[in-house]
Length: 506
RNA sequence: GCACCGCUAGCUCAAUGGUAGAGCAGUUGACUCUUAAUCAAUUGGUUGAAGGUUCGAGUCCUUCGCGGUGCACCA
Image (cartoon, rainbow, N blue to C red):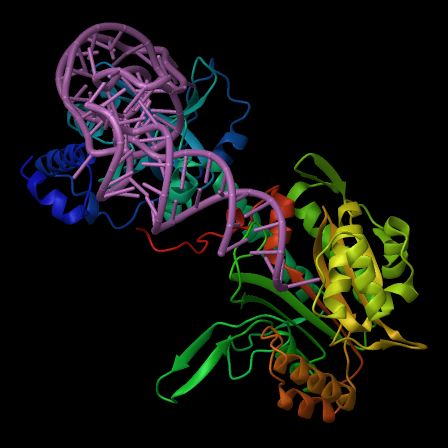
């Protein structure tokens, strides 16, 4: 109790109730000190097993069997304690793999140790060592022979049954969310697996992972407002990248042939269920590939990821079940709009015609032809794309970095993969004609001057790079966060980002 | 940016404009096969903030803050 007065200062403004709960834990820490236990002095524990693996390994152990002779050491957080009088405590210890029930008996650990365990709080970190048996109710249990207090939890945890529900608190204090909510842990375990499988898949096909700068003098490769920062020693303003595209293609010019980056991208835009200001994208470029080979690669990659996470081809997303069995569906861009909207190519490729279609659909007029086409596609086609579907043969007006299709200059060699009604990837044969690229940048300068500040300023060095000669190359961009959403059945991007951006706390 | 919803104990939730409550957690006690342990007792509130209406506001009104969702913007 002597610790109590300092609490309010230490913890800032806390309610009286919380101050009491903190004081109780401080008192329990003091009680440990009196018994010679120093939780924060612990520096290691001999962990020889994890809960889940023991559960599998001893699945056949029955309540009638004697405890298995091998002893195991586990460490984790004490999340529940069921005290049975002066002689026995059942408790739950959670490690990274899951829950292990433990059984602490006075006659097994001795009076001193039992008294120490009795003063522990929910949330304390412990190491336990002992043998395994199955309780009469059927739960695999570690009979504790010895234990160590590895850290003390000095603040109260949320309700053990309801967990932490408040979304704001979950994001602001993600560590508490992760402690309390097993399903949240599972999302990030899955995310880690998805990213590492992406990497493995790319590496296995001869791609080389590259790290390009996140701070750039000119942020290009996409249409988006950048974040701005400043380097003091050089006294220059810098942009955070909005894509990895231009630098990765420089590497293709340099002869690296197959490159990719799984990188953080920053776009200074609004936040909603599918957009976070910083997000992760896989961009990959293959020299000497056409977009058709990229499509095959894309299909294999997604099938692989779905299988790696779910062990089968199907994904449940919201109300739907989506099959990633190959081959995915394929439909041409203008065929898709014609099929679901009845508008033909000639109408859509005419800027005035596209504006007319917008009006007929009851949509507000768009500033540019390209934006009009995007809106029309979004309204007419996307709602129909539940199963994974490649939409190919995009118009050049909405594809400033893609190569024109042979024999059809209004179309580019590009596709986008859709599934669950949103875009999953975007790929095209890269424009490698420096003169064409220069012309497109010049057109963007004009658009930028008309007030569209999402059009990036030109990156002339990129044109210079193309002048050295870039081999024919196919490139792809995949939104990693959205893949994770799809594969973990989450409707909000913030649920798959560990620390989503929040306003500062009031 | 616009609209709607939410904000009450550490957590999860109640409370026709009329005395702010419960469960869990905490504290004390009982219990050596419990598992949302059980049983008994008990502590705990500036109802997001500030104004206003009212005899009386958690509840109604205004402004603000934070969050969520939808729309707009945007890959």
